[in-house]
Length: 234
Image (tube, rainbow, N blue to C red; front, top):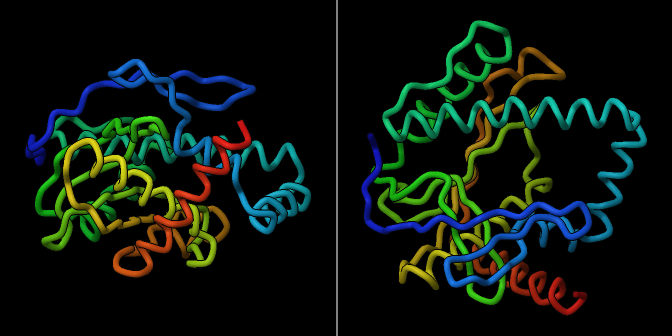
């Protein structure tokens, strides 16, 4: 078990709605929108246009298939990483998707988690009173600094300009952790593993982005504006 129980993280209950997106009930009884719901509701025009263009290009049925497959593999990879950190038995199975998920998670462990010296929690429920709530993949110490760590997977290697919202998401979780637990997280790490769906040569390509300093603050500002926009629209 790699967990160092520095903080006690209370459970927050999730509510899913087709019309209002995901919300959480905090320990204080507040019902708050999720980080992902706010990000989805406040996408800029260019981001939404790019997503619509992709769906039109591949077709709605194929887009749904890709998103479902991505979600299934992503869930398995997250489960592998969570079980590894908790020191529990990792998912088994011999079908191709389960074998791939194990191999991909092993790469994240060997190339990414090796730099995480202390982990305070995985699948950590967080909330910012009166503002938002959500669940982050991992909180702890990365390269001697407090950090939020996010696990991602992709069909092909990502260009950095396409992960803007990933960075903003990390800052949202950092702010929530700081305000509730008195931490001083000003760093985020995105660990992304490529499934190689489009090109087998890309299978297992590992990418990592570190967010800190002025760039971290830039995304903090972006997030605060988007939370305000979401609540004002409601």
